[in-house]
Image 1 (cartoon, one colour):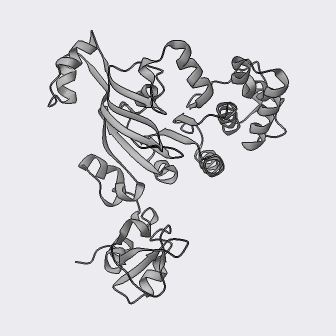
Image 2 (cartoon, helix red, strand yellow):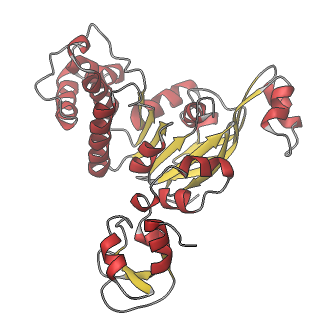
Image 3 (cartoon, one colour):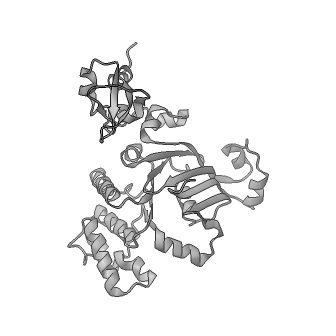
Length: 339
C-alpha cells in the first residue's frame, strides 16, 4: 500500500455456511472452490487482495455468481468479512463500530445500484437531497447542493418531476446525482446501467466518463459487460468463483490474459481498438516522428503502416520519449499475424 492508496484489501474472504470463521481457519491453501462447496459452504469472495489508488476507476467484472457484487459489499462493509482486512484511508473498517461506519459511508462513500431505488412520492430534487437530509443538513444548503448536482448530470429543468415521469436513463441520472450529493471521495457502482436500453446505456457511459474526468473520484464499477469495462476502466479485475483471475490495465488484459478464463473474455475483442501504443513500447531510444502513447493502434494504423522503421518511437503528449514500438508486432495485431 502507498500514500496514494485509498482502499486496500488483503486476503478477503466471504463464506456462507454454518460457523464460517472456524471453517476458514482450518482451511488449507490448496482448497478449491469445489472443495469448499462440497464441505457445505459457498465462497462468495475467495482470498482477494488488491489496492485501489486515489482517482482510479477499477472495474470488477465476471459472470453472474462470480462474486463481484459481494466483493463491493465487503469493500463498503455492507456485509461483514469472514476473513482478511479492508482499509479505507488506512483505517480498518472491520474494527469500526456501527456509528463510525455509518459516518464513514455518509462522508466518503457514494453508492449507485442496478435498481434505481428512488422514492416514488418524492420529486427529483427531494430524491437527490435525501442523503443530505439524513445527514442533518439544513433545507437551504441541501437544496442548493441538490440543484448543483442535478445540473451536473444533465437534469436541469426536471427538479419537480416525479420518478414515474422520467425515462429509465433519467432515473439512473437521479440515482447518480443522489450519490454525488454528499461529495463522496469513493464511488461504488454496481451494474448501474445494465437495466437500460443499449442506446441509453451508451449515453450514460459517455456521461459517466465526463463526470469521471471532471470529478476524479476513486471508483469501483461492477459490470458483466466486457466492452463496458474496456471503455471505462483504468484497471479491470476479472473474477471467477469468488477469486480474482487477473487485475490489470485493459491493454494488458487483452495483450496478455493470465488464464484461459480471462482469454475467453478477450477472444472476440478487436484488440487494435483497445491496445494503446504505450502498452507495446519497449525500452530504447529513437529519433524522428513519434507515435502518441495514448492513441490506440487502430487510430495509429495509417501512421504505423506507412512508417518504414522496424522500431517506431512512442512519446508522451509532452514529447518525452517512452520507448519503441515493434512495427511488425503492431501490424500483426492490426491485420492478423502472417504465417
